[in-house]
Length: 148
Image (tube, rainbow, N blue to C red; front, side, top):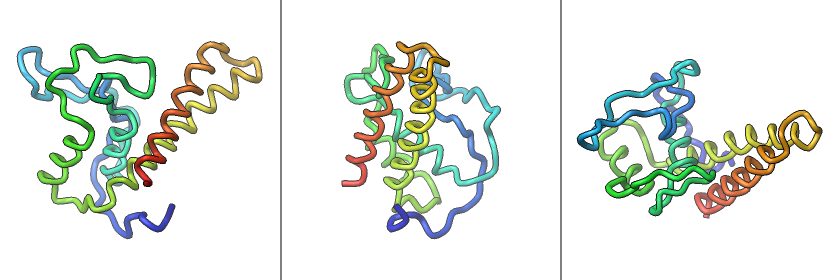
């Protein structure tokens, strides 16, 4: 995994849990008006947040790696369009953006597998564990596509 790992980064403010459920949009247009849920914020590489977006951004049908469905999805960019927009408006080196996406997939997948392991041990709800395990498999499949 280090072959494509960025050699350097410019420190900045990281949200730490950046995904679609933690942003608010205007009700009369597509502008972002707020990012919420900042308790994991820190100084680090903000592209790690972009990797989280790559891991969780829904497909063209609005479906994500989980059973969550955004409706209507009309007007949202694809993940590739979102990354292109970010790269064209950022001063950061985005040449290894897929590395961040793979990292985002693995980070979230490991968290989800922790709950699955607790469910298998009888310490968490089995249905929740199974659902999160399914999402983890989808994340790892997404990571494999980003690597290819």
